[in-house]
Image (cartoon, rainbow, N blue to C red; front, side):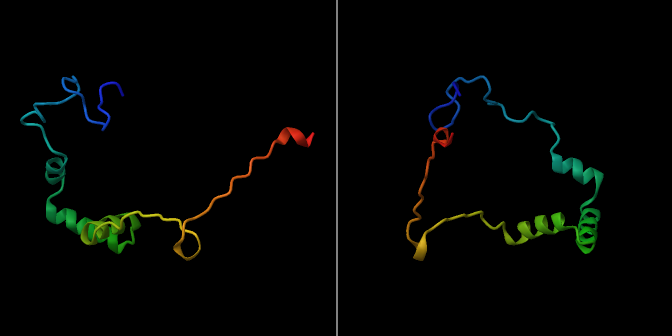
Length: 96
C-alpha cells in the first residue's frame, strides 16, 4: 500500500487516520445490546442455549472463561528433527 510504512503503519499525514477518534455521543454495540436485553435476561438466554446443546455458544463461553487455545501447528521429522521435503517435477510433454 502506498500510504503505509514498511511495518504496515500509516505514513504521516495520511487522510485515513482518524485523529479525533469516535465522535462524542456515538453508541457502543454493547450499550445497544444492554438496552435491548438486560444483563440478567442475557445470562438466562445464554444458559438456555447451553442447556439446549448449542455448540457455538458453548465454545464462545468456554473461550471467554478458560481462554482460547492458541492455534499452533508444527511439522517435524522423525524424532523432532527437521522435516525434509522432496519435490519432483515431471515434464508431461515427454509422455506423448
